[in-house]
Length: 381
Ligand SMILES: Cc1cc2nc3c(=O)[nH]c(=O)nc-3n(C[C@H](O)[C@H](O)[C@H](O)COP(=O)(O)OP(=O)(O)OC[C@H]3O[C@@H](n4cnc5c(N)ncnc54)[C@H](O)[C@@H]3O)c2cc1C
Image (tube, rainbow, N blue to C red; front, side, top):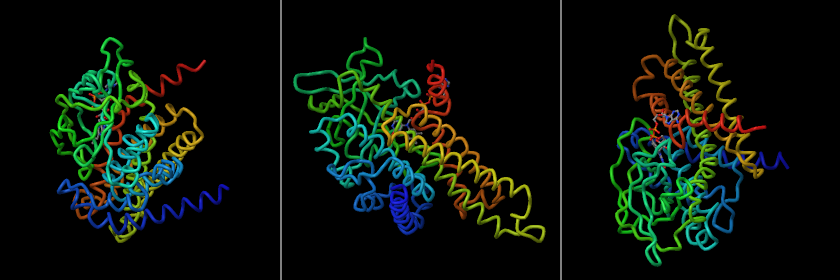
């Protein structure tokens, strides 16, 4: 059984690798410089079934495991972190929130469009004053007859201007604190919601990051997603899964940088020999390879636990914390192996170096992951 699954995963990953090599790799720098979202790539990913990997076939998904999904994110991110990030936000945040907490009617309405790639999904928790402290959400949703009326804004939202639907968190009962926050599905052609500032970013520049502004944004009462007041708690569950994808994203970027450094170290000669013959370079390569493998194993452990239906709060935080921190270190070392050539855009490593930093920030910073892990450790009897 394991061999069959592994063979199946290998075939899937081979298809992803070929797709990334032909459809993504040749354009990576151009999209980065122009901050251009690769619409065509996402259209094709939808056609190939990669936009709904973790969802059952009845909703148009591929019915794959979270292990498969993490491996796919790694493979794509090894070539372009921006595509990995957009794919992760679409799949394990926006679409998965609808899958995990939506009614059957909501699942049937939205998931086939999302799994086919007809629509992309965004997910909005962060606000200007509610980042790590997401319970401090200010956006409000007020019931008015058969509608909810949303007011406020969401910051740093991936896929905000390229998506067609977003899951947004808003306060429905201020007195109840975090338990007074609810989730809503909001279609982005609703006249009450508009895209605000497009962020000009250090890295992940081909991914779309914008503010979403709601001004008397009226949605049908049926667009409440999950129980009233359960939006924040449900968001934390969604993030538990999302963090596994950010860990995979980090592993992918680190691997891309490592492979570039390994290749370069064999080609570049100084002092009459390839630089890979110098012990200092060998130590960098050895440490990178070991840390990347360890990060992948933590990511796979969290993914396997999720596939087994376990609560993965601690495991996903550990995977994300470790993978993102070692990935920052690995891309730094990969750049160092390239010397001055690592600093210029003729080589891919400078982009990995810029992209990877997002992994220690998005879906909860490294400091927040440590708090999550410590809380779990301290709550054990
Ligand atoms: C490219 C990009 C894409 C993103 N995509 C999305 C998205 O699709 N949807 C979405 O909702 N959000 C998204 N985010 C937002 C991201 O999740 C937040 O940026 C992140 O959670 C941190 O919030 P903040 O930026 O407000 O930082 P802050 O919370 O202001 O943190 C600033 C610093 O203080 C530290 N800090 C804060 N509180 C504590 C504490 N209690 N203990 C110790 N240290 C603390 C932090 O670790 C950090 O170092 C995205 C961000 C970026 C950059």
